[in-house]
Image (cartoon, rainbow, N blue to C red; front, side, top):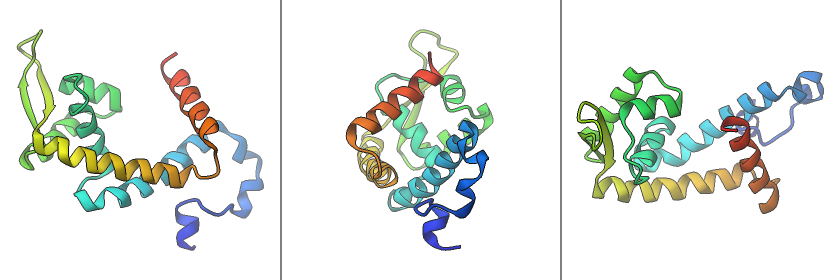
Length: 153
């Protein structure tokens, strides 16, 4: 297998099989290839895709709770705790008492977290542009809109 095969830049012979039209397979493969690319792109800021996702949400201004992070990212709450712990040790996020429910912990980006987030976002955007290079801007926007609608209709 070549590096191109590993990240999906060549069309394998099996892409001619009928399963290559299954939406589940296409989405899973797009995600798998994207994860490999994103993790490579995030290596310079010592993040992986999951920790980047938590940091991105922590820096969103939405003040997400740990429970909201787990639900939105489809992760077990214990996985979120571990990810937030890691980011907190690095000084990228802090946990604070919830504004509306004092029993909940919200996760917020620190100034250093905001700086790393900006670098990570640029790296991920470049990775996405590379992965979706076969699509023009309108097609990419349509893909995003369709995926969002399918998830949160």
